[in-house]
Length: 349
Ligand code: COI
Image (cartoon, rainbow, N blue to C red):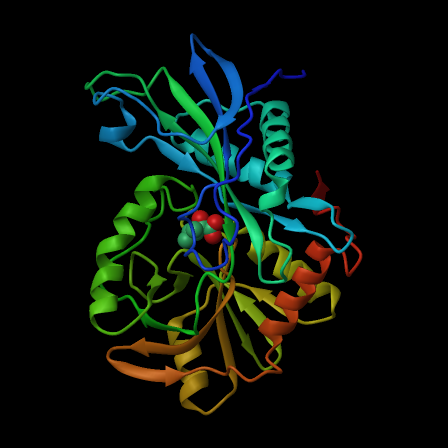
């Protein structure tokens, strides 16, 4: 089914130099919005970016029925713009919506909205190799009723912001041995707002101790590594790329999946299996070369310099020849059109 999206255009661009603005502060000129009422999506429109107006009773403000995605568009070598793996983002969005009892957005509507919005704001896609357009589709429950219930009304929106390097330096992370991000049967795999809100307090404590992020561990024994901060986590030991398996508690990262695929195609050994933090620490303590990094849409790869456990710090390898940089470069080369896109990851707008 084709969805009709009305478009009202803002003609004046307010900001030209976006590189100096920190991540997420500068929206592009337009946003997409659709309203779910009476069991269907209605009034789909692209309009100048503006504030929302809603009742203080809106259910999203009280009970956390919110889901979001984070995806990116890139300026390619030939000047065209591509959105990276929108299908996989759509699938993850849908899984998150199911977990939070929220209605699906039909795929045609999702894709058409993305396409039209990114096309309209294409001049905001940075051309620099460290730049991209970060795209944030999200849904919130808007029924205005204070009772605890699944909302009958929603907004689905897409906003965009130019993005450059997310972290300016390698990270110091602390193995978390008290708090948990997610437990089995919970919402860890879903990209819902509550997961992020719940991570703030342990992350604040880690920052007070001099760390940038938490290395999350399993909820039962704090023995197995899960994610780091808001990213999947990966390691390279003895030339093998290691990452924990997707379980109900870990986000199915699109960057994680892309890096694993690229590594396998390069003939690099990959292991997706439970990883005890003791295994990583033992390797570091024995003087082995260990690469550690976060992988996520916003950060792409975020090198980890220090891993701390029980107050003791261990240093990871950050040399220029590290595999993580090669994988990140290969990913960028596909996104920019310098290397063939064998998996049809690039959706050309
Ligand atoms: C992303 O990487 O897209 C996220 O949602 C994480 C957030 C830190 C921006």
